[in-house]
Each structure stands twice: as C-alpha cells, then as structure tokens.
Image: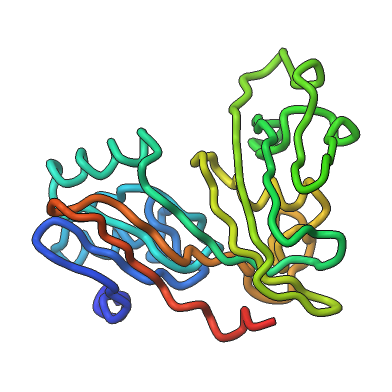
Length: 226
C-alpha cells in the first residue's frame, strides 16, 4: 500500500520527502492502515512529519527522512518562516476580493476547536474580522490565530479561495471560515452529513532547504474548479 502513496511524490532527496496526500488518509497517530507514517514504517521506511494537515485535507505534506533534517524543518515552522497556501471551496456571497481573519481560537467541549469568544462578538470592518479584546474568553487557554484569503473564482453557489494561515493552529482555516459564515464545503466539523470530500487542499509550501528557498506545489484537484 505504501508503494501506491509513493506514486504521489512531489520532491525527494536524502533528507526530505514531499507527498501529495489524498483526502481521507491521516499523516500519523491513527491506529489503522490509513496512517502514512505507520504504512511507511511497515515498508521499512522511517519518516518524521515536519507539520500536520488534517485527515480530510488533501495536498502537500512534508516529511524529514532523518532527525537532523526534522529539527531544521520544525524550527522553521515554529519560527513561522514557512509559507503555506491552501485552496478551499466555500459558500459564496458577501466575501471581499481579499480578507483577513484575526480571531483567537480555544478548545471547547468534546475537544472541538472554536473561536475564543462569543459568536455575536465577531466584528467585520471592511475586509477584516476581529473580536474586541474584552470579549475574548479568560477562563480557558486561548491562541492568537490569523488567516488571510483571496477569492480566486466565484459562482452563484461556490467560491474558490486561496487561504494563507499565518499561524499554525489545529483546524484553523476550517474554523475561521465557518465562523465568518463561509464554511468549507463538505467539512464534517460543520456539516452533519457531508455528501463528499472536504474541499480543503494544501496547495503550496515554501521552506528553506539545502541553502535555497524551495517551493513545492500539489496541483489543484479537478473538482475544485468553480
């Protein structure tokens, strides 16, 4: 099975492996065969994820092939020098051509990620969404989170966005878009019975490697066309 996923290699050298991950496959941590790290290990290959993308998300995922490379890559993610861009299909209508979402996150009941403030406290000013500092919860840990987006295409029933997370919080893009009224199509966090895949794709990643700036890209899935 691991050999099938190796057919989706975008970049590989002695230190890194970049895959175009299909939706529905986890990066690691699962207790079954849909775990990429486990499948690689079963095939005799040790991989160290430099970051995570959700199981429902497709696209670019970066692995280190040894611990020194893993340390160098994770330091870049921690310092936020890695540039990330995603493609998302959402409900249309009322979106500016480009926008900024600056909404802190927290973890609520059943480990669900949510905005760390009452929904009614979210304020939109032009192309920006924020909450007043006084409205942010003070009884739970909260995490500053910023996402910017541009609208690449739009029809009467779908909008294709390019989203750039400037922080790397769990479910950040999914929660940010949903809480401003534009949930990602097919997202099980916000649809009770999604009919198909979650339309979120890790499209592009730029990082420093081998003395140069490297940009890798996973082609947009055909069904993202709007």
